[in-house]
Length: 282
Image (tube, rainbow, N blue to C red):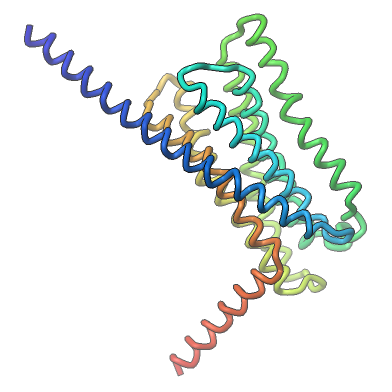
């Protein structure tokens, strides 16, 4: 009798805890949707005015933010149809997530080439090439996700197959981000043709992309790997998913590093602080 009472009490405590956890998840998701959707659309509109024949960097960020809009819209649908699974919505969200990762790689690669291979990049930075790369980046996630998704949908292959594909896909970009950042730092001293303000913007963008991936994507990747090893914790699962859902908001910061006036003011402020500190020390 006592043992049954203890089991019931433990079950009730666990049920209440997970109800609170789901409520927090719901609130955070609603905040992400209400803030992320209008802000992302505004930033996309603003970035369209930055695209010029000799300035194609915003193209990749615009596509990245469009993929973020797709993710946020899927989150909205998932909140509306709560407690109901919809395979198509899950597929669109997953493909949007992987597409955003592809464009994060494109942004980092483009920034790396400006510093490491400025002459080559100067002759290759055309809108046509950027559009072709963007189309390929949109297609890659579907080429990777569609086969296992169709197998799951029609042949009832375990959903773990799709999860494994996503995990493998998300692991690959991390060493690339590290390589681009380290390679850029190594090439900074040898790069004379790039102005110091532009170097500040480029390094800032690379650091931002690496931070977003490390803080928001890696926790879910680690959790997913542990889950496949039969180590499961629902709290960690919800938290890691929350981090990934925050990525559309974090991506908005990239707009700052594409605006010359914003970085110019930042550099001026930093230089002014250095001068003040130097005068104080004297």
